Length: 151
Image 1 (cartoon, rainbow, N blue to C red):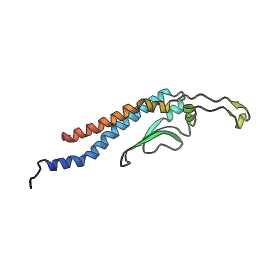
Image 2 (image 1 turned 45 degrees about the horizontal axis):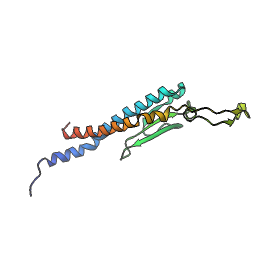
Image 3 (image 1 turned 120 degrees about the vertical axis):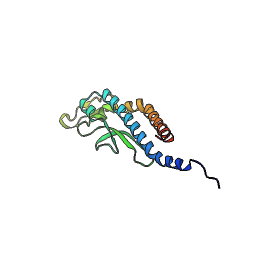
Image 4 (image 1 turned 180 degrees about the vertical axis):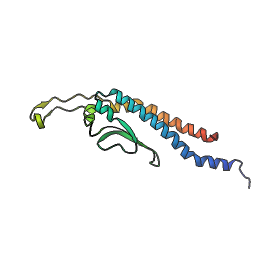
């Protein structure tokens, strides 16, 4: 039986591949999240909402609205971009607007005309998602090249 030259080296490289790819993807995801957050902060008109916008590995803080989460195949690469919370509860109202309604509370019985939406959150995601996906794809290719060249 003939022995294939370099087979042991190839096995070692393939064993390293997942960890190197994960490092590259993490870095790419963080850059993409930072771009989305920066754009969203520049589009909002409220200082409290601006301060509430951020991203986190894993789940978003309670009470916030999340754009969504991207999760890797093993579930260990989960990043969530969020806005709102206890101090910025009005983030949803700014993003989606409000319908005309009858007020309760202090001004009970009066008509509220509603507010127009001033989107900042999903607009930022849609504007940057292609670039973020491309960056992740390039990071996988970069990791494969790094492994192939022994780097």
